[in-house]
Image (cartoon, rainbow, N blue to C red; front, side, top):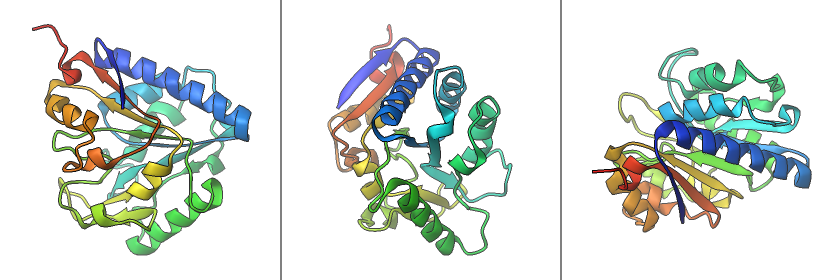
Amino acid sequence: MELRTYADADTVAQHAAQYIAAAARDAIAARGRFKFAVSGGHTPWQMLRALAGERVDWNNVHLFQVDERVAPPGDPDRNLTHIRASLLAHVALPAANLHPMWVEATDLDAAAAHYAQELATFAGTPPVLDLVHLGLGPDGHTASLVPRDPVLAEDFASVALTQPYQGHRRMTLTYPVLNRARRVLFVVTGAEKAPMLARLRARDPAIPAGRVTGERALIFADDAAAGTAAQ
């Protein structure tokens, strides 16, 4: 799994935005549209803000969510709230090309099944996304695939619901979707991530992130997360 390191989180965000924009141009040229899914986090919001300034044909982009907290619309804990502020407020993505997770639904199981069907409609059966952006938690989680959650064992459904984690249930893409993606981009910043980043690079299956097996997976990390910061 290739690791590219940069001095700080701001530089990681900028290079990640450039990488995603180039992937979008490649996918649109090859297949007519770019289907990608984004996770949450402070550095990813910087990344999406930088992506808004890149050359991308937004008319041919379909934006999905990797995961989402079960919370009301506009809640500051919602990833979609930050996606709207960081990216969608600055680009002309057609409304029909945004695919939010319906976590405000009364029937969450039905909402997860609906999202799986939406993925299939736009990304095929089984769905293949052009790029999935992932983070890495200090406990080794990625997406909302967290330690000891039953969702870790899901090997068929594309979308699943977790048990409560850090105050919220989550809706998340599962390993089958993540591992079929044409590209996987991990964005990892902060010294607290260093131990788990080492385990991710070793593809340690004992942590959730270590079970992401995309052959074209890349890690963009700052020096602190990579353990190469000046002492």
